[in-house]
Image 1 (cartoon, rainbow, N blue to C red):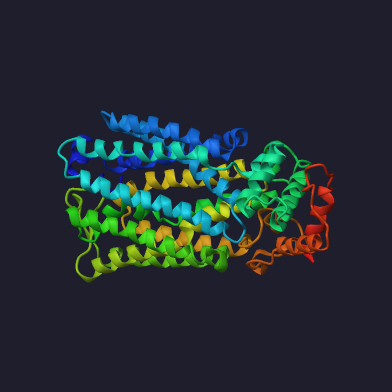
Image 2 (tube, rainbow, N blue to C red; image 1 turned 60 degrees about the vertical axis):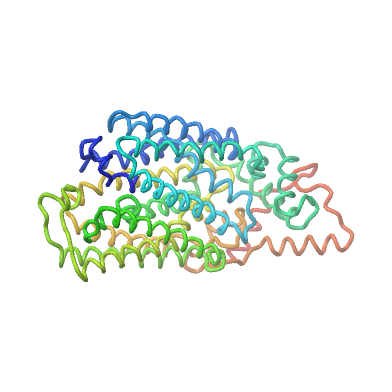
Length: 501
């Protein structure tokens, strides 16, 4: 939308939408995403992570059709809400799927690939919108929106070839399939590989203990679960409250404040998406070594500084424009000369910091903190938090620009520093730990978040022990869960004791 909202064709056809109307158009996708996120968890637990993604694509096809055929902003909003249902399902369940099939050493980078793919899609569609801006009449934006059919169809054709999540298969009692899939994705099909044996033992151990827990919504708050719920939902909320969508949704407005107009504005907006891709690509190489905590804490601080600089420059050097810059009633302040260069530079810097930190890491962290029994619905709750604030902020920004102008950036700067404080005190480190080990990090007696470190995985010791056992002639014929009884609660207590001690 960001490449389209500034075009003459869009402005003319939709009668110069501004303020709350443009806010509603922008926020409609997030509103639909909230709806999709709410039933994504039950859908994923019922059909599986993979098939839930396929169902989501059907909503995308319908929503896109409604947008292409729209005859006013009301129909456009409806189409974006339907598209949002797809986004709500996929944004919550794709990270779950990737987290459940990835090796612990690569889990962060694998989910970063998802974020990178999203950003490539945004960049491509931005320049598709830019290219379509040269088409006369309503065909300009209808063509751009119609092209959205293509990625959905490609995804639907590819999904059946993907493996199911072995953890979901274990959860629904399909143990043999779970072991086969786990062996294929972790060890080339060898079910006696020490990694496969150790990981399967962890999965069945923790799953057995979890099934003794409370049912319904109480399982999200009992004992130490409230810590996970707080971490998963708040990290997603802070990603939005950091204000990054000021740039990703309304960068053309920000650059109008800095004196950029027309094609130069649109191309400059496209540059930010290119930066997004480049720097998210960089984080792929170090996210699993650096860890989640430093990126979340220092990323929020860096974004806060950028927000304060942009707001301070606009407030100090900006000129009030009552009729709106170039008639755009969403943009009522303007700077020129050196101050405008500072606004542009720190807008780009904010995107760079966001791409390196909160943009990918918030999705990685939110997918890791849940237990197997709660992961699908828990990640859906986290996505609800993300999209609720996305909706609120998308609705808030155009009227905020019209009414409080530069002070909008100061508000987001303060919120960024709030995010860094909570990350320091409540988010334990999860990098290079198995999903089952992460569960222990939130239990009673676990280390304080600021004392946790990358790695220190108990799974590595288990793999070594199994390898030694196999060298001694012992063969793990019956991977735990097939033909053996295993004392899950005793093992979980043992794990908790090791972490506490």
